[in-house]
Length: 263
Image (cartoon, rainbow, N blue to C red):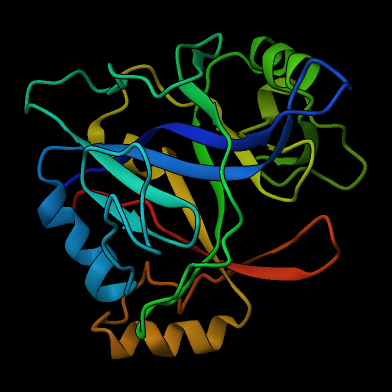
């Protein structure tokens, strides 16, 4: 279904400055995710047709502020793109940064923006989800990354795990951790390190590991809507592998993985 790799190479977090409190501004959630694609108009057919996400504009209630590239709206959060030459490196770093941005220790570009509430957003009629739950990206050194995200920015551990199931009671060593999830300090959205990924991973593998997820309240209703929008059931479709995650508030949110990969 997805014939063009689109890897999430940076994400921006919504933040508001504290009055007279700590120097670190409060971080409430994911504001937007930027993608790099060799043909975003082709890849975005999945977002607009199957997921029913509307295209954003620079103005209006479904707007994408300070965005020059194509934009897909989820709610107040959105997905933007940057074009990529066919010979671009596999890691696909973003060369142009947003305002108030920085690089984490491994060169991933993140930024901090202040935004208004989402009260003016109107979901599209066929929109499957209006909640950008989390974004994940390949990381190499867990401890180095944690010094930046946990110690400096105040993120907190949400969950960690690995592809291999360990016997009950067996402690999980760092080398056993394949994904490490951390929540924003002042909200329930989270970021995920994808660990133990080979340095020579190809575009298809990176297109799986670099990803973002959309949340829904009812997975079965979301699956039915996806089928109405034209998604054919396959072995890799959400019909066979729905995921659920308990948020910080105690609610359960089903998530649809949305990492376009080459077929």
